[in-house]
Image (tube, rainbow, N blue to C red):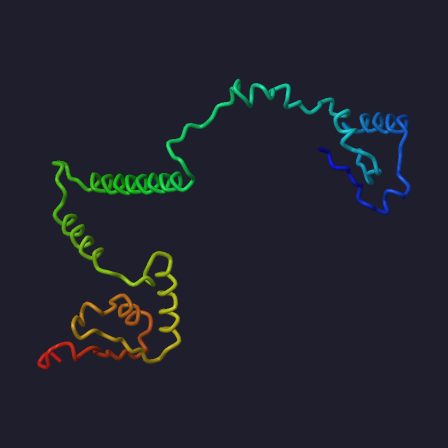
Length: 219
């Protein structure tokens, strides 16, 4: 059953409507066609005309009809010939998980290929790896297993070093805190070399921390 339609009340229905005759529209179309190819002619003000009716006539090209290129019977229904993607997943979440797993495997393979290339570049004429390279790789593997703080991750180390050197430049006395369990391992030799070379007038005080964790005869 068709329900009765109702026009929305609006004041514009009772106002004057701008109309144009076909002769004026044809005159404007011919004038625009003559000036459209002139690079020195510029339209300063567009008149209130349906410009979409003039553009196709000037260019000489009409919009292609979609129903002629892809009929409804060939696109939908039992005789549809449109290609459909064949996916082995049943939902978007499964597709996302497969994509993430594939990206991780590709990244891992790329890292392994780079590592193999570096090792092949370091091989000698006999095909064996130098002993110092093996020792360096063992040390890197040992250091990589040590848990690190999140602040020392990629993208933050440069900012931390910048702040450190700002503090060094603006201070007269510096306190270098050392761990009593490993004093030599907690020394920052690069900062000490920088102070000895560039900032000789600054004083450095070494503070031995965590002495309660080592035997008394060591402290």
